[in-house]
Image (cartoon, rainbow, N blue to C red; front, side, top):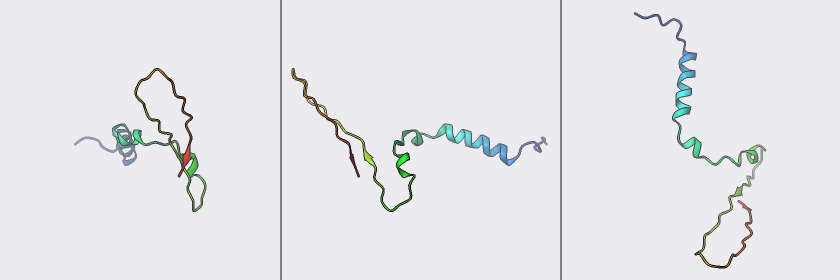
Length: 72
């Protein structure tokens, strides 16, 4: 039998965590720009909604649109 005395649960857990972090897909897709706003304790949470823009058909004129931020 092999010598497994040098393999500890700590080493196995560390290597497993590295593999798990490399295999995660959804964690990289989560929008995390609001993490600063969840630091305070309270009963109300206000977050900013990302500004959404719409496209129009191509024309010769340029219409300037000022984006406005809102919160929920």
